[in-house]
Length: 249
Ligand SMILES: C[S@@+](CC[C@H](N)C(=O)[O-])C[C@H]1O[C@@H](n2cnc3c(N)ncnc32)[C@H](O)[C@@H]1O
Figure: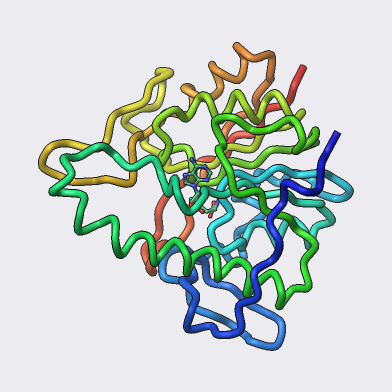
């Protein structure tokens, strides 16, 4: 049974200057706000695998500024999102402390501003979407059951990506997984470790093949449709992503 008390009280954010917009957003009364990272406008249905959201209860892992949250809501979904707590932040790659020190301070501020951008947009849309700030590796039963779980561009950032997929599979009948497409990995159920001692990539753990998730979905008793690829824009540059939809058999 869902316990509404686990969801966050909406934050009141009046000033757009207090926000970090990860997504480009088009907000009622505010117009277009350019995102710092991704502009998914016009390609949402490809991103979300053309799944029908009307009347569906959706679990979203990692909403960032909430572009997908509010798009799913526009399509008739009742969305609950899971976002990191202020204490946990991301699964930072464990580089030596001296190397991470410069990253942690500014990162904390960006995360606050990222959460602010969600609540600023939430108010502009008069959204009913909810946020649970907590641990995606141990989702509480009080979140309830869902029709669909969405993991959009989040698993690459998580040390134990399969644990999150498993948590979602326990709570939802349909899984939507979106991640970067790496043609050189295709054909085998593999993932590749991204950080090296030299590249200092502290935020991304993995490159995945699509088979990595189709095989694991099958292990859990989910049938996957053929993964689709699509172009999405990050800071003006096109990137190829894949979307995979898995349904419990
Ligand atoms: C790269 S953004 C993707 C945003 C959106 N889902 C999309 O597809 O455009 C990753 C989001 O996941 C969140 N995130 C990262 N690690 C997480 C974790 N372990 N649990 C929950 N959310 C996480 C980040 O804070 C951020 O909101």
